[in-house]
Length: 451
Image (cartoon, helix red, strand yellow):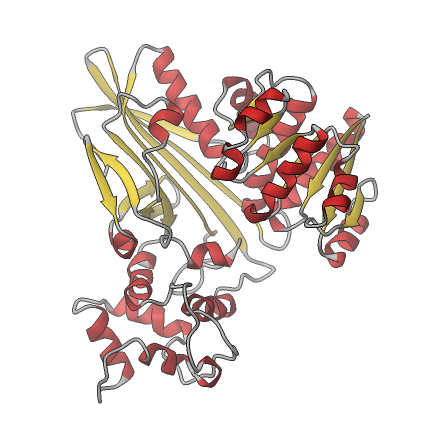
C-alpha cells in the first residue's frame, strides 16, 4: 500500500483531496492530510471518511517528521514560506515531494542534494505555475517536432469571476489569497522581450503597460506584465523567439483603477501608518494627498491624473475608499488597510462561480511560412464547492502524484512539469475531465500581435 501525505487543506486543496480520495480505493493508496486548523480537520473527516486527517503544527520538526515518516509521497499545499521546512524533512526522511509553488532560491540551492538522493521534487505543478508549463511545452514541442521555430511566445492567466458573478464595477472578487492580489506588481521590475528588445517596467508603471487579450466566447480582457518573463527563454527552449511575454489577466478597466492605488502608495507594505486607529478611510486617503480646500474626490482626481476616467472613479468610490467610515484597524501598513476594505467589498458569495482563463499565443515559422496559434482555456466552478481555481490547481497535482506513484516519471531531481512524460498524460487526463484547451491556427503575414 502506497501512502500519500498532504500538508494543507485550504481552498486550493479541495480538488486534490477529492481526486486522491476517489482514486485511493482503485490503487490501494492510503491518504493522510494534516492542517493547522482543527475546523478543517473535522470537515475533512466528515467529507472523506477513508482519509486520515489530523491537526499539525508544521513548524514542529518532530511532529512534522512523525507525520511524514511513513509516506511514499509528500504533497505540500502550504504557503510558500513553510516549504523549506517540508523540504528539510523530505531530505532527512528521503521522501518524494510535489507542490504547486515556485522553485525558491533556498530550494534551488539543494538541487544537488535532491539529485544525489535520487528523489523527485516536482515543483510548479498547479495552475500558474503548472498547467501553464504543461500546455505551453506541448505547443512548443509540437512546432519543433514539425521542423518549425517559435518566434513569439505570449502567455496570460487570471483567476476571475464567471459571467453573472462578476457583478460589481471591478468585475472581480477574491477567490484565492488576497495578499497576493494586493501586493501584485510590488516585487521588482517586470522584464520581458519584445521584437528583440528587452523591456523593463518598474512596479509603478506595471498597471499602465497593458496587453489586450481576446478569448473566444468570453470577450475582451487586459493583461499586465508579470515580473520575469525572460527566464522562460531557457526554461521552454525559446532561443529563436524575439518576443517573450507573460501576464496576468483582468477585465478591462481594472488595471487603470488599480494603477491609481499604486500611484497613491496604498499597496505599500513597508511601514505602519501612524494614528491609524483614529482614521476613517477618507482620512487615510487624505494622508497621501496634497493639502487642499477642495473636496476629497476633486483633490484625489487631480493628484492621481488629469485624465482619470469616470469609470475609474466609479470603481474607487464604490469601494468606499473615500467615505468617512472608520477603518477599524489598530495598526497596519497601507496595504493592510486596502486589503481589509477589499476583503469586505470583493467577498465572493456561496452562490458565485469563479473562472480561470488561460491563453497562450505563439507565432512560428515553418519553412517560408509563418503561423499564429492561440490556445485558450476557460474553467469555471462553484466558489463554495469545487472552484475553478481548486480544479486547475489540484487536479494537475493529483495526476502528477499518480504518475509518480505508478513509476511513470523516470527523471530524478528538482523538476518542473516541462517533460513530455509528465505533460502528455496529465493534459490527456485533464481533457477528459473537461479541462481542455481550444486551439486556433491561422497563417501570418508578418503581423505581430505582441505588445
